[in-house]
Length: 419
Image (cartoon, rainbow, N blue to C red; front, side, top):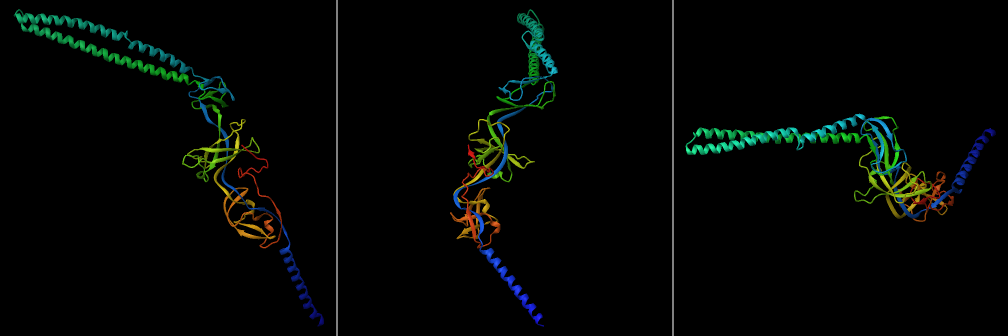
């Protein structure tokens, strides 16, 4: 009996010990200092940007294509060749075009001779006309003589009528001859012009066998070899004026409305450019053109960006990452982006932390603009947040506010220079 009464009492003593230990653990957890890293809220510039990638291209570039078919008879340029507008790049062998041109020239010369002053057909008609004129002159004299005889009564009136009919007949013949000469002259002249036009067309065909540079520049690429048979519109060379280089980037259709090229009255969007060929150097530029039509497959628009100060070593084809500035707010409150989670931050006050909701404006990978909820100089937790509870006591290590340029926000380098 005595033993049975002692067992419940022991259970109660054990339970009491557990409760005491749990309460001690909670108290130890609540009042122990949690190590955290904090950073102050400061004033500065907030920048909103659109991220894009692209490559350096010549502002003026042309793909030179074949205008006629045939085999490549000669090559006069290769990759890297500097050329002037009109320089011969290659020659396509097309003997049929050359033969047609020679035959066309012969036909044109014959047509021109037929249409000239010494044209045989015109000369024959002119001779006939002169003969009719002589007969008409004689007939008019006969008419005048017969009229006088009729007036004196020496000849009947019918003789005068026959003479008049003869004059009218010869005059009609002469008029017809002159009309034939005009018609023949028009036909021969038109034929000569047709032949001359044909020669020009054939000359253009032969000229198409000579592939020439369309502008001053450099041959960037050659896609044909000596002896290769090419077809019409086949690409042969890529020629570009590399004195002016621009950056062409693909901007997602969801962001393109915020990018301005200055055509709608808004200022041109600024850009921070990181070229893979120039590590730790950020170049400045501005958007000069946004192409009106989108790439249907990429669902993106091409924006062209000019460099403010391009490096001398800049080359066509270099790839880049770009941040295009779409908004900029000066002298606003800034907090580290790593401090915010689901619209709130942990704020340090008197050795303890409190969770506080904030309103965020512009943000990038480094900082965010605090519209409301924080004051300048307050410290927010940026490391150790997962171990915090409201009112937790903390041991804080202060990390100074990040003083790096807001752009490019993707470049996490410690010695970035701006150009």
